[in-house]
Amino acid sequence: MPLYDHTIHAGNAGDLWKHFLLNEAADWLLQGSSSLIYAESHCGYPHYLLRSPGEWQGGIGRIWPLLPRLKVFPYFETLAGLNPSANPGLEGLLYPGSTRQICELATSRGANLKAEIWDNHPDVAASWQDYLLMHSSISRRLAEIRFNCSDGFSGLLTHISRSPSPSHPALLLIDPPYIDSKDAILSEMLLQKAREKGWTVLWWYMTDVMTAPSSMDSLELDFASAGLDGGRWNGAGVALAGPEGSQFSLRDHLRQRGHELIRMLKWY
Image 1 (spheres, one colour):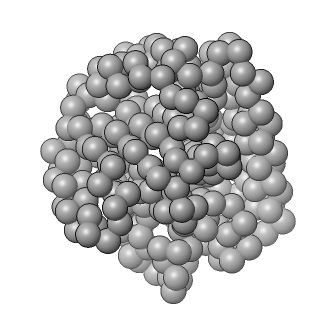
Image 2: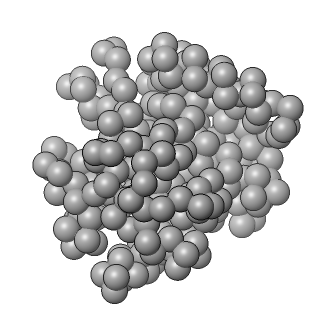
């Protein structure tokens, strides 16, 4: 699989929507449990330092002045906590990657976390090694993160063979770089397999190049309608799947919270 570096895209409009929904899903799952199993197909770095100019200016940078009001959402609560004195126009904002966001959320909720993550970029692998070593003495939960420097599609097919339980819900983020023509096909196969095993799954995509299969619930955001600038991209979406036979009220929760966020952004 070709190597992909997410650095130039970190914090952009697509990241904002993806990470907002991911945090809402994780927080919802933790309402009835004190632990969470988490997996991610293409995790990227633990965090990024945002520099100008960058795509983040059309995403998280555009709504940074609203952060005090947006802290009612877990995603923005984490960003505010990691950047307590940052100004929206200044460089050096610390933007956590997906896995670190889930770590921060679990810690803030007093929950145990067991995460298994994949990425095939050697620089990403080195960054995670350094991060976990640096923080292992601070938080015991971080020792539950296992990084795999390999292809997330093949690794996860084995990993998700273990079914979660009601007391240990499992959340999977499928976030491929879409630099290989097979990514979308492999993502759908992985999503269906994980759902059969009882996982809750979020699959991120750009609406300009693909849509979610009709059999799946999807939550899409048009960037311009929310006051965001996605550059050459018009919008992003997240396909949602849950355990077979479940009523899956998470779908309604995410839709409601998404509408609340968009209303707040439009008022600004």
